[in-house]
Image 1: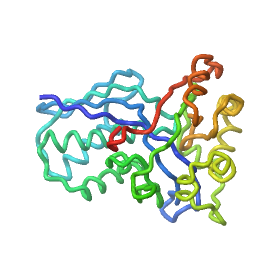
Image 2: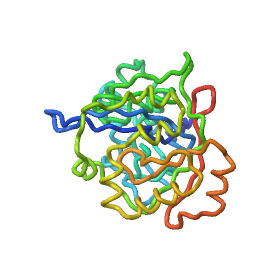
Image 3: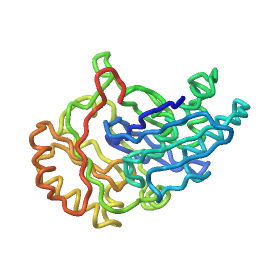
Image 4: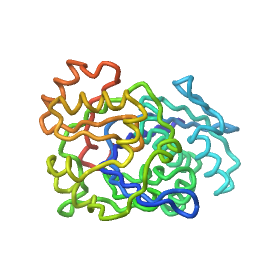
Length: 289
C-alpha cells in the first residue's frame, strides 16, 4: 500500500522583517499563498525508515527535511514501524518557494496516515514548527494565511467570508542561484516602524497599491548581492506584469498578471533568458492545491 501527497510551493505577498528576537531568529510578517506547482511525496510500509529522491543533488539522510519530519513524528508517537519515502522533486530549492518545508509537511501527513496515528492538528503543528517556520502553513489546506512571529503563527486569510485566493496568474522566474536563508537575513535591515497592514493591502487586489505598499524587505539586498535576480526582476517589470516581487528570501521572482494572455506571451518569448519560467495559479476553489 502506497500513499501519495502533493507538496505545493508558495509565494510571499509582502514580507516585513520587523526585529531580531532574543532567540536569534527574527519576527516577521507576511502573507503566504500556495501556488499550483508541487513536488510529490510517496510513502509505503517498511521495516526501517529510508528515502529516495528524483534529484540526486538532494540529500536523502537526516539533512533532508522529509527525514527530519519522519524522525520527529516517530519519536513523538513512539512509532517502531518504518517507511520507504520517495520525493519526486519539481519545485526548485533555495528559491524562496518553500519546497522543502512543503515536502516536510506532506511527509507528516503521509506518515500520520500510514502509521494510523491519532495525531491532532495541534500536535502536528508543534512538530512542524520545530522543523521550520514555513512548515506549519503547509499542513493546512488554506490557500493563504497571514504569518507572524517566526512565520509559524498563522491566521487564515479571508475575503468577504471566503478563503482568499489570488485573482491573478503567476509567472515564477527562477534564476540559476540558491540563496541561503541565513545569508539573506544577514543582509536585511529589520524595520518595525509604520509598516502597512499586509492583509488589508493584499485583499485590496489593487496592483498599483501593491506596487507602492506590498514590499519584500529581502528584495533590495538580495538583488544587490545577486545580479541574476536584478536582471530577472527588471525583465518581468518590463513585461506586462501587473506586480513583481521577490518570493521569500529569494531568489525566485514572481510576476502577477491580471490577463492570462500577457503571462502566456512572456512564457512563449522566454525573454528572461537565464531564468527557469513556470506559469502557475492559485489553488483550486475547493481549497486544495
